[in-house]
Length: 471
Image: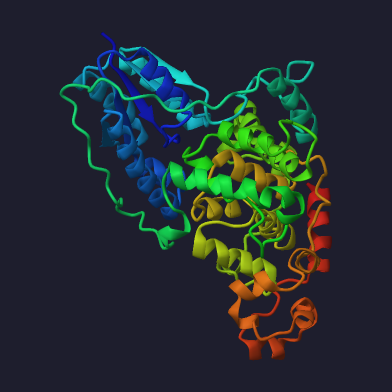
């Protein structure tokens, strides 16, 4: 008789869950689910309180969905990662489980943890690929090396993916009850992770994720190529928190995008085709993280850039964190992050480039700050984005890519709507004055209660070019 244990991690859903479906196919004496709370691991990984709150609320919904299928969810606490192998072993034995199934996590620490679990378990451990559309190692160059530039990666990704498109599958049916196993309560909060963000910003559950996907593909997706760059409009899916927590699968997203693209994986309509590229970026950064593990250990992808003389400027870092740089679009973006736990992707690039190129502050400071505040914090995506923006990563264009914050504001917030939403000090300004803030003198700024620009962009650009050239 088989009683599998399904260990949920960042896959908080019943629908299209590879590990859950594999375990259910083998179960004939019930099925047991497990989730481990690990506050020490969360702190070590700089997981944001808003993210932990989102996980817990989704975990409660998952518990209800599993309960309806006669699958009890056991919730236990492993204060530190080192406690996990013995805890999984003991829980599996206590509940009469014969094997363990889990969806693979690709980060260095998580991979090492799973090696330790396998050694301690004394039972078969089956790890499944589920978080990405194509697992690391499946998209390689002709010389059998990992891709380091996105565009050629995408071409090969389309070829490999198109040869065998993954099909999303519904969750399993009701199981035979697992005798002797009780469902655990899911805590509403964990000490040290109180979220300042209104939970209504991010409704929990698979239904909420599915509704968000349906709404996006029904309207905004058709205009996504242009709309995704305008932070004042809802032009993006805002599904990243649900993908990061595994509340929806990337296969469901790809299927919806292709359905809106006349069944095409590449080409076709501009909006869906562009969004499919974003799903590809998500895979790409995971593949890079696995092939080059130094990027998840605080090292630059371009190792030569470790010699860049980053400035130590605590007060300037504090002003950037607080959204008090004196550059309206940068400040609006940082305040959006504090209030919602999320930031528009165009603005993630802008704020990251401002910190690293205008202020010449180490990208690792910004990477850490984002992880401590993002509801969708994901190591591969966050690190990939920061290293791209700081020119230490996989970007095909080197260090001379430097965004001008004022130009970005005129191009992507031309009516000042986004800035006015998040920077109330500037709401009284007409659009022309708002978009020419770099010309406004210190007296007028003080009258508005808005700080002076903390750096001259042109001079900062010269300083950054010199720093990279000398590295």
